[in-house]
Length: 302
Image (cartoon, rainbow, N blue to C red):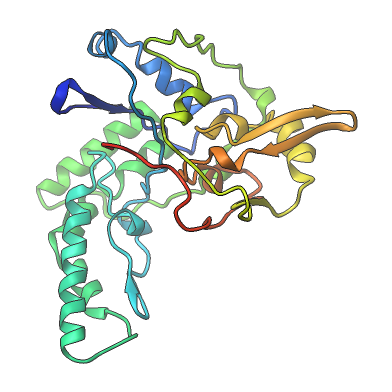
């Protein structure tokens, strides 16, 4: 987790859950609520008032997941390109640098009367910048933890990062796996004992979503669709006990009982555009598309 002190007596805090977890009973939202009850965190929140809430999937693939950075007429910068330093959970500095490099490349392209082509100069500059050097040093951190577990993986990742400070390290780049493929059947795990929200430090999901100020026009097409409407009740619910109702931090997915049996209801109005469902859905049956312009959360001071 992380916690930052801000002006006006405010704190900004959050909890990061890696989406390659195997236990389908896990709820990232409930993990966050439980973390706030930690003796080191709770005293900082007591007497305060919850003022905002939001959620977002972090592109934590690291250097080996950075895609092609340019396309005709545009470029990928910041988090959209995956420039997050995962061990530090920081990416603002790399995002700003990538934006500066892209702007410089665009400036020179416009000055040369170019239009609609690819900013190859941006990609070259980025790969030769300190951003690339920093991300290359930590590229094995996340896959090491995913492969060897929290304790051993942290030791392997730490040793690799320390050696890279000396100009050496593991002689190879570790590979990633698909987060959605790591989920195991619900029968293999026990349900976590999440405490009920106390309304002071921990809260329920729907009242939290209200503070995200999310909104979508009701007369617009729903931006969350299913490729096959039968998959949730044929696979997700009987095998994994419907994990979409837990991994979604906004209560978008809900199983409702009807006369003919259970049905997955999509409350798209609640969506905070975190994109977790697009990543974690085991069958990759959920299709997240860009909603009507202006829709989504409206985060104040976040």
